[in-house]
Length: 375
Image 1 (cartoon, rainbow, N blue to C red):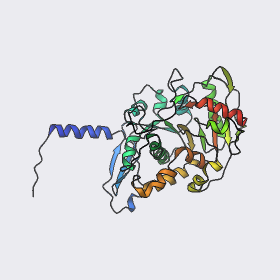
Image 2 (cartoon, helix red, strand yellow; image 1 turned 135 degrees about the vertical axis):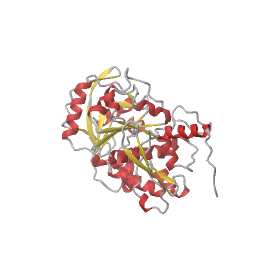
Image 3 (cartoon, rainbow, N blue to C red; image 1 turned 90 degrees about the vertical axis):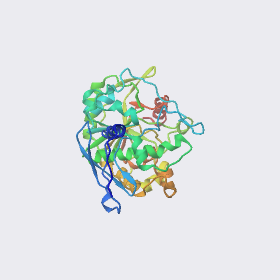
């Protein structure tokens, strides 16, 4: 049997458009592809911005890939009326420059940064963007969550948009850590693309210098630059027993920061140190062991803290389609990024007041936390 191949200009144009869309993506090698009974041919791609070869595989109908990532659902997109929108008020731009402090942290402090973004919003974090200083932009990988959703959540349905974003965002964070691990980074800064700097740092050069010095001499697994402390836990009660945060002695508390109408000293404190345990056990103990600090929109991980994230990612990949009813418990109870970060990072440092925020009242809640817990 013979097939005629006729050139079609429109079809060719469509194919080239598809290639152009896929070209910048960063894909992740599946660690269990070789054990699959149905492994398709590997496709070797090269990212336009970094020229780093990476590999993608399709396994049993589920593509294992490292791709750009989704932050809190597609912010700004219109949702069906039956869906619930984010109940919190997003933060407005508080700094004249988008990322004056984060830009220096990206350029000078961390080995690499992964920005979790969505579709066209990823363009703000790619070469040619004016969102970041040039030196910072060279160390940023934009992870587009739209493809992550398509790879892992083919048959996933959910009526509440605000609840739906948690498992999707969590998988994106796990893939960001895997990307950092594969590149041999000793640490990584992970950012969601809807954050705003709070504008509290008055002496950026002094802050960056002191920050680099602290992380070079202190043992740490994680560091949170954002945080959302539940008002009901602190407003009418003393500091919860699992929430003490001890200022680290290595930090020189000399930085005057303007917050609201007053001034505060910048504090870096460490929450209660707990030993590593299996990530599933840590999640089961959850908030009984750990202080409720939501928002994982800006945090750093040391390579010593990658392990639980990589272990959960392997379980996610082994589960296959996360939209399957068989994976309901995994999706509903385990893929909760804020709880996972707090429960599985033994030595977590917190920067207060907050360097970055997602919602308008984040800084106010952090100030309440500091007052109640004497930070």
